[in-house]
Amino acid sequence: MAKAQKKARTKARANRAKSKPALTHIDAKGEAHMVDVSAKEDTERTAIAEGAVVMTAKTLAVIEKGNAKKGDVLGTARVAGIMAAKKTHQLIPLCHPLAISKITLEITVDPKLPGCRVTATVKVKGPTGVEMEALTAVSVACLTIYDMVKAVERGVRIDNVHLVEKMGGKSGHYRAAN
Image 1 (cartoon, rainbow, N blue to C red):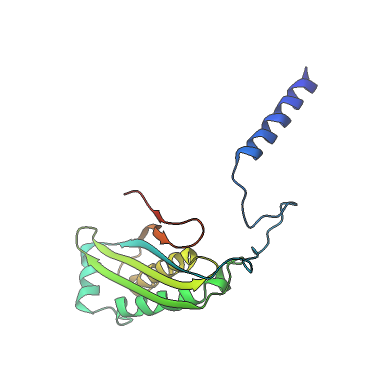
Image 2: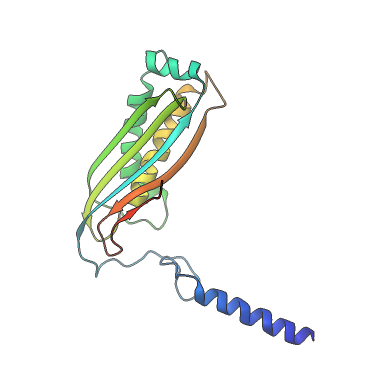
């Protein structure tokens, strides 16, 4: 009986593996590798990501008044996010270095959170997408906001970093559900 159960479990595992979509960064041996994009056409690709930094109204007031001890919180976070997008391939091991065409990083104060909403739009003309660059820009901008105000409030929370939309490329258009 034990032999039959083992066989059934092995078969079930094999069936599950067949039903899962293939991971492009994993080869036939199960080893990580960089995807070869040399045969792919250069197309215009855009990705939009967003996230939020949630804090108390008191901390948000410090940001709005420009009274943070470290300086301009939103300006510093914007530059940090842009710089991070350009270095994504140095941070994420299997990302391709890209000649990014445009990076827009918007940070808006939202008293309803209370906190800041961060949105990054990254554009490239190339053989692979810029989702990771947009997500990296948002993540680092959010981390920078935290760093700039942690002396005022340690309980600041980075929340809901996600891909909002991607356009271009072989897989087409993607828009996250609300």
